[in-house]
Every structure is written in structure tokens, then in C-alpha cells.
Image 1: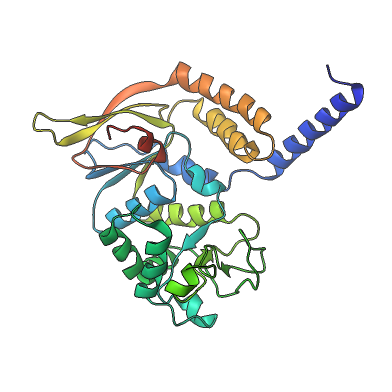
Image 2: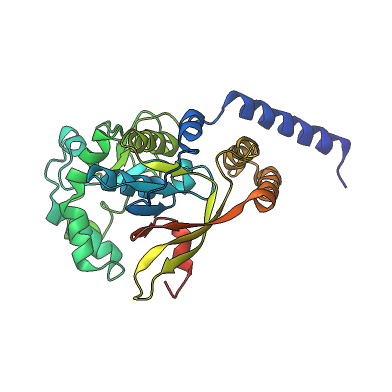
Length: 306
């Protein structure tokens, strides 16, 4: 049972959250509206599943090579990336490192640290490539709207304040790693007050849209399809179509769910259940054809067969 004081406090929290939601509409609403209804009779060259930062970057890279890209998301884009701190681990001599006085960092130095830190968890060839291409990768993100700077955080922290956007995000200074590689700050945080992940995702997503990437929200993958020879032929999905009048309501509920997940999870669950009810009642099955499917939705990692 709740006391009258507890009930009053709960009501105050509820109305405070409602006011917060009204004052903080989803920034990407316009982008979603003008892309969610795009349809084409020609199958895409590539289907990307999951519209977080990984999926959006995959879509951009493919579109830059002239591919026709269809980007799918089970919600309305962003994923866990939009809720994150917007930190990109980069090194090997980035512009920001050099400006902060850590120009000594090289791909080999970065590799020495990460190899010691990760052991055999990552294939050595993949890890070496990650380090060798790190500077180029960060510059590529900047070309597509990401912003980073050399304001170095002077103390160890898990996440810097909005005064600092470069920091030691790992154990580079700790023993024994500092004996194996010269310490260097590699946490490059997107320049944006507060948690930067949402803004980092937004600018990359908008770049993808400018490149002609086709986006379909509220499209959940049921199965990856293969032809007789075992080659990928497309995906089976269930989705809310762009002309469904419930799409806007569903988007609003999902946006509220995401905003509340970290500070009021029980209320977030209420909005999520309402959104799920709309999806289960209104979603339709559809087969989407493509010879290339990229899974950028982290959940598939729990399927051991895959």
C-alpha cells in the first residue's frame, strides 16, 4: 500500500516526466516522416537490418559505392546508440590526439594496448585492421557530420563532463598496459552537451538520407531467406506500413519509452506495452528481396547457430 505522501510523490514524478516529454520531442521526426513511406518496385542491392550507428554507417558506406540501400529498424531508428554517450574509440594519431599533445600514438602502439587488453577475444587480423584504419575512420565520420575536439579531460573518468571531449576511456595508464604501450587518450566523444549518442546518430542518419538510403521503421525481421544454393535471397518481415494511421502514434509511444528507460523504467514499460499492442494488431507480413543482407542488430548474437 502507498501512503498519501508516496502517492503525491508518484503523481509529481509522473507530471514532471510528462512535462519533460512535451518539451523534448524526438529531434528526427521530420526525417522519419519523409523516408518511412518511400517504396520501390526494384529490390535493393543491400538490406541493412538495424538502424543504430553501426547500421547507419554501413548504409552510408554502401551508398557511397553506388549501392541501392534499404535500411530497416524494428523501432524508429537510433537503437542503443542513441542512448549512449556517443564515444568513438579511435587512435593511432588522430587530429584530436595530436592537438592534445599525444601525437606519439601510432596504429602499432594502439594495437599493442588492445591486444593485451582483449587477448584472443578478437581475431588478430581484424584488430590490426581496426587500428590501422582508425584515423581514417574518424575523419570519415566527421565528413558525415560527426564533431570531435581535443579538449582533454585531465582526470580519469568513465564519462567526461561537457567541458571535455577527449579522454582516457580505457586502462591505457594502468599497469601492466602502460608498460606494453605508451598511454594515449582514445575516447573521442561527439561534441554535444549531455549524453552525445543521440546527436551522433542523428547527424549520421541525416547523411544517409541525403545519400538516398531508403529507411523503413517499425519493420521487424522474422527470418533471413536463402535460395536453393544457400545464398541469401532476402528477409521475411512484419511491419507497420508507412500509410498506416497508427504509425505516428506508435512512433510517439516508442520515443517516450526510450526517453524514460533510464530514469523511470516502469513507466517506460507501460508505453512499450501500448506500442507493442499497436504493432501486433496492425503489422503485416512481407517478403523483401535482396542478394545481400547485413545484420547490424546486436540481438542476433544470442543466436548461437548464426
